[in-house]
Length: 321
Image (cartoon, rainbow, N blue to C red; front, top):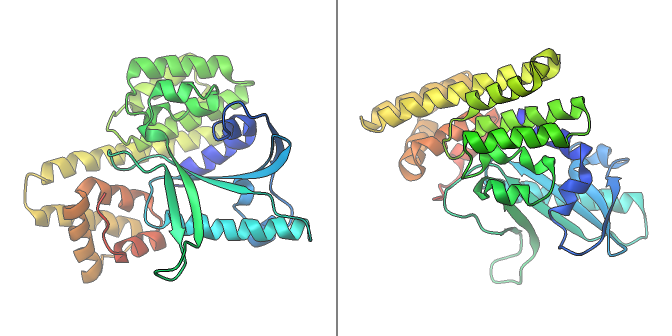
């Protein structure tokens, strides 16, 4: 996830009420009490994704996990995270009941066919009653801009480039809404950064990155480039976005050629990411996944998974999209 995860976590911390409201049943009063911290950091340093709430005067905890895609390891990560979170909450209030916890995976890209509304990680023996964890799946990339806007916050508008109906005209309006809705110039720059980073993911192939950065720069008169850290993030995101576009173009051309050409291209990308050539088993897995899932999904994994995660993904059984 890299820049996307860091950026989304940061803007979510600025607007926790807007994050929570999207997942609380309509009509139920909600109060945000803060993020889960203190002893939690001794157990798991990513638990700032857990938000304390009071819903209908009852304590609740909301855990939000931003995911590039609903890959096979996401249920494992959610289950592991819930274990850390439950232990941390017990440590904070010994003898007190642990508040009910809701987990949500916010998914940024993936297959075109609609994702399930619920995921699960089962740990029970076969044939025994369910034991494990369920979590909600919020596939924001499968939503429309209208649906994202209906959530009532500029926080959710940063996901607009992921929407299946995103267009240049629609994003121009989104840029204007963020300009009007941000509380400060600093927050506005952060929201625009998230918007641009989301555009590099481009799950539907809209290729609106360059148009969007021109819109933002025109609206803000160079605000992003004048902010050193944000400027660096944009340059890196732009580099990754252009690389993704180049690779997709090459892959579309190679799909009309031999399977060996596709394997060679993906193998070169693997070598760039890990600093070594793939082993024979890894090369075979790359080819089989390109054939079963399509070269585009394999290319996404090669670009976005960290080294160890990429090796694990190639070793897993292939599950069709």
